[in-house]
Image (cartoon, rainbow over all chains, first blue to last red; front, side, top):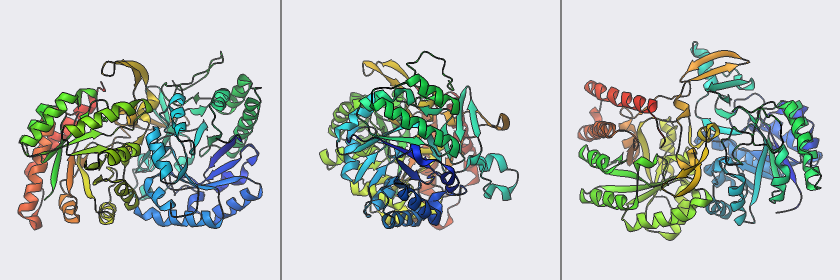
Length: 311
Length: 311
């Protein structure tokens, strides 16, 4: 693995992109792969996407495009267009979530990233995907840090580690917010009211999760800021902030906090408590996902303070 | 002709499925299929099952459809060798590393792509065919007939449809709800060591979160409540002629973990439907008197969801 640290953010819409301070991030994944109906989704507005790519290139950021997460046959025209745009605008890579999209992407001269929905759980599949042209993967969410380390058996494959944000818990074929909120009026069922842009929670016996209509996300934000020294020591250099559902203001702040935290950690001068406190001012409910072999919603801390999680 | 594939959660269940008209059976290999341990087969028992099915002139497919954690790779390699030696007619699997390993080491063993792979488009079907799959099951969430037809037309591999059973809220293989909610390190008496319990994709320990009662809230206000994520069971009786005429080869029934009586009723009903179609294809209509049987099957599934136990 290279020695230079890369912190990427996922940004879904032109609205957020216009307002964000890009300084904290080295690269951006552009577009919301979970629903093409979301207002301002860069994945479905190729003109806006082109403008955004050019702006980011100008400010020397790396740019990755993303593709629909569970495409059906009718989505492949858009995927082709995204791939062509990626080539013509010389982006740094394309993220695929589906093996069909991967098969198509291989035909283009683009660096391919495979998302968490590639379900890479072990070195056998990491090796196979690498042989099929994948250059970077996000390991399965359900892997612990110790298990992710096993994937380093494929040295040419870049491993990207999510360090912050709302993690996807699943994708549905129908929009829950459309059907649950508007079911009295048939016209309303078919119209999208952009309800996913608001904070809608599903609650069950203390379990709280975000619903974004066609996708479900963690109720608590993944926060790994206090554990960055541990992750860096394991040799990883590519990290991501899942920023799809963040405001531009919060995403900008998170970028700055993590940028500083990575710099400190790489110099061996980490102050985990200070960094965690800064994050907690922005995001009150936190978790570590599955990295430490606990339920995804739990938060494991080495700092002796009360951490609010959803458990 | 088409093939009706029924679940075998026990030797008794296998016998009853065959008595009621199954052409083939699928059965889980211990610790490696996505169902509770109590309905999987240990080595000796799997051999008995194969011998029984073959004695009846029926096919038997082994299910090894978990996404393997690194620590499970050696167990998998041992088990797949046993399954091959025991004479299984094919292996149902999901993990790309597993598919690739089987193709390389057991070239004559047919590979069936699992529902866990959520195949939703022709390119994805071709991807798995390129890897060596001979049967591809389309996603259970794919509800547009034209999407299934496009997949069928794109590959030479046989196409399988899940014809009846409960379906998940999220696309199969892309759901992390269970382990986000709860997973813990416990002693596994089968493996003789501690391991994480509660992972859906990797261990098949789904907590059926999406079948439970949720409250949907926005800014603390309740918008809706009930079994909001529960999707209606798949019932393929009416669409059966469409599937057969487009060339679908295998019809799979769910239910390895269901009571034997459920498997018997579901198998009997779909056997009757397939036979009815082939007697008079142009006059196929689901007879009204089948409604009572169907209701019983649907009721049994709801009861099962309420009594769910992952052990």
